[in-house]
Length: 309
View 1 (cartoon, one colour):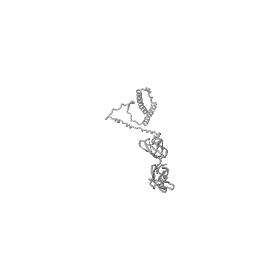
View 2 (cartoon, helix red, strand yellow):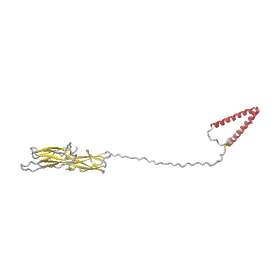
View 3 (cartoon, helix red, strand yellow):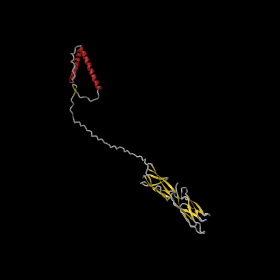
View 4 (cartoon, one colour):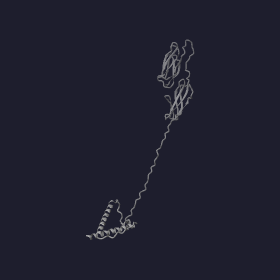
């Protein structure tokens, strides 16, 4: 029994001695001082104890190696080492490995156009407006007058409810009917932005003296002269009308005719006459003639205009 233990102890000691020798050689090559040489092995029972201890060390080393192998990272198996040093790499065999060079990447650059900024200028200036005809302070004998002027192209021009004709260059014109005496014509221009401008002009209308028919005095057997007059000449009412009166031969008839109305009356015993005539179809602001005639063929002609407002 003791002999077997001695043999096992010797083999274990030899293995340990071999391992220690290799470890010392490795430490010396790495620059680490070697451990001191172990003492001589005892004999007998001491050897058996020592053999058991060595066996325990060998088993412990195996367990540690198994643990390291179990928890080692999953990497490729390292090449075999000689005395703890890595072996030289093997010579390459077979066809050389060719590494493909990736193609040169091309970066496509898309030009980005900055968004355009539109600046809108707010129009706060009133349009230009001027009256060029007739001149301010003019004295006119025509009842119907065309007013003319200039304004900003694209603007509208009005006088009260009436709108003027404006061409592409801003020239405008508007026909108005005057009343006897001073007339203040007020014009307003409005541009596309809603800005307004105003211009005024004053003209005086002096109508000519009314036409009258006067006959010379004849002998008593001759009829009385025919005389006719009118009251207004214009009228803004609906329907428009005028009043006519005068003198003539008693008992004769006076007839009033026009394109838009008519009437008649008799000369009284005192030699006077009066008639009120309506013109329901008269056009607005367009003068027309009114003819008065008695039964003796004597005539008088006047002008009448239906005006607004």
